[in-house]
Image 1: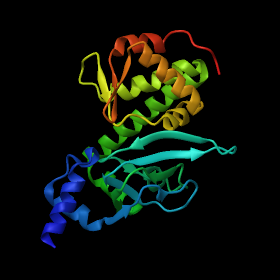
Image 2: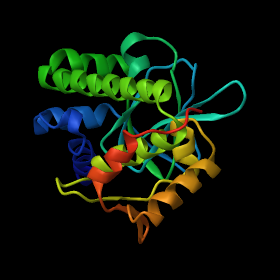
Image 3: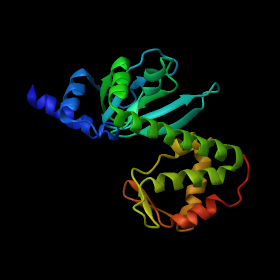
Image 4: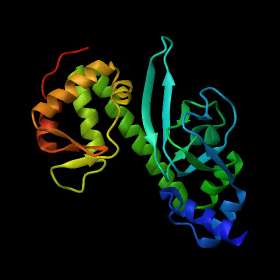
Length: 236
């Protein structure tokens, strides 16, 4: 039992949101969580459903998305190890805003909504980290709305690849995206078709800006890609 608690606590400690908690507080939190495993493709939360559990992703990758009325998928992001899913409904008591499905095998620590709100209220550093996380979401969504409203398909694809690359960059002018994004995922994120994504990525590869690197994608010149993303592109 002790080993199980220790493993649970170590899993929670990897979450940036909980980085400032004491060991005793982490132990208490681990005891309040329900630990669940999800297989690839399995639903973790469903849009418009009620229920306010927050899932702290201890291991795996989660797809955050919705389906439009015409059946098209709109992909918002992937939540990685250390991220959280389902927090909006836990905070405001409203219905779920998106669907969340496991992209790989996922281990989550599920925390009841009242316990999550208590955590925010009693731990100011956790609350501060949560507010910063929400502001980051607002900034990211603002950028996406601007891009969808003002950029053509080519530049939306370039901007998304640039965003992914910057998320893994170590400050140099190149970056490796791991794993390489699926063409269908890029299409769902920027509002286009998989075929258009394939054509644009092939064009960037011919220009020497993208290279296949094992299971990843290497962006060889971030500055040049940014110049292209800010350039002209047909509206669609």
